[in-house]
Image 1 (cartoon, rainbow, N blue to C red):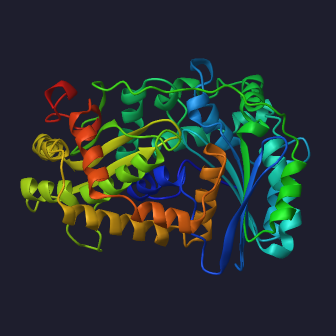
Image 2 (cartoon, helix red, strand yellow):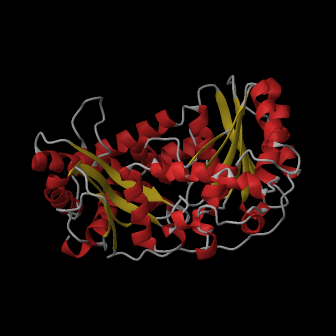
Length: 445
């Protein structure tokens, strides 16, 4: 049983995560078109029938950390850690033993909007694997003595959070405060305090058919639709938690040391609000720079080049930051550098971010890199399942690969420069972790 907040590296995951919410995936080699069905109970089923050696099925719930309240903060992190514990139909031992016997893998991942339970297994053992996937995703019982055993794991997860990830997490708190501002990690004061009743209430409130999607790769569509139809999930829409960008605020965690990790962003765009403009933000991200495009290469993009000019040969890590949720988003950059150079690096990056315009060559390069990176990323069956799942769960529909490529190609230089001007005039939020001796406050940017 595996559990993680994100399996992809930070800069790649933030590059792809926003696009996944609206855009349909490019099927892996050998796959057919994507098929999508909305069942009478409003549950969405989507499949790509692929000639792959491994079948993948995910049950996704629109129940990420944005749905937590102050009293149950950390519930989604506990759900990740508790995946695979005793359910209504199976013991922990039975789940582990049977999944291992068929050579499968059962994992759970989550972000601020979605919790996904995913099964990976060979097609001839799919029927056995689906039984235990259903148990884990829909049959939780949360026995108190088993929850006690997750405390060590939760503390270990918190201790392992990299500085860049912590900075991005704090950036959401500064930018949104509540809802999308909720961390994907359990606060220290909540570890061991969430009762079985609290967790059951959270599941009952958010694991409903209107908030559920089932996606499959290398699985017959009708078979998966039948499986989804019989899932023991209550009907209903649940509560919608809207989130508003605040801006002009900051969150700082001074830990000393040699490095400073800084995340700065202004409001982006949500997929369900304006998909065309969100694609323009994606192109702008790659035009701004997402780190070295080649191994051991120079930082590309307009912000990457400005940082290279400001810092010279001094070491730093950089990536333009763009994440689009269902209703809003964030756009900016994440920077890691030696503490003594942080102030100079931030000044250079913010100045370029505020420039408000790009050349046609920068936009053409950004569009090509974004398109190629997206298509390359979803060649993996695992990533394809992530893409399909995010679309089905958040947008309740899936676009065809041909439509997606056409939408990317349709982005014009004027569209990118329009969102660049919005970024230039937007209110910034800042989060910083590490040695913050030279890191300016947000009102000084």
